[in-house]
Length: 80
Image 1 (cartoon, helix red, strand yellow):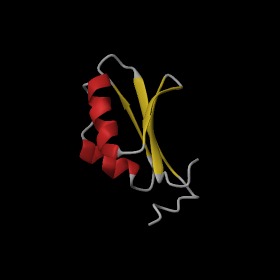
Image 2 (cartoon, one colour):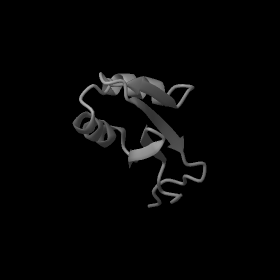
Image 3 (spheres, rainbow, N blue to C red):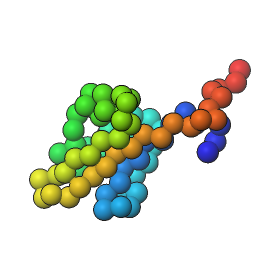
Image 4 (cartoon, one colour):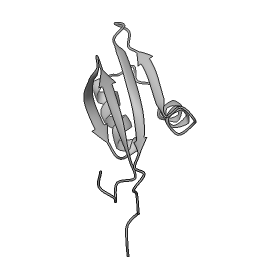
């Protein structure tokens, strides 16, 4: 992974990656467009940035979704 990427947030549906982003705000906006029954941004932040780093939910039709946050262990930040 690129050393300047701090983390990647991934949406998995039926064991396939549907969407990935490096920013929670952008990820949430796209998630809301893809799946209107997405949990709130505060819920995602609490679950993904807590101990577990993943969150499971199902939509109204029963389709399972998994959201995972992967941290880059080689992250060095932006150099000035």
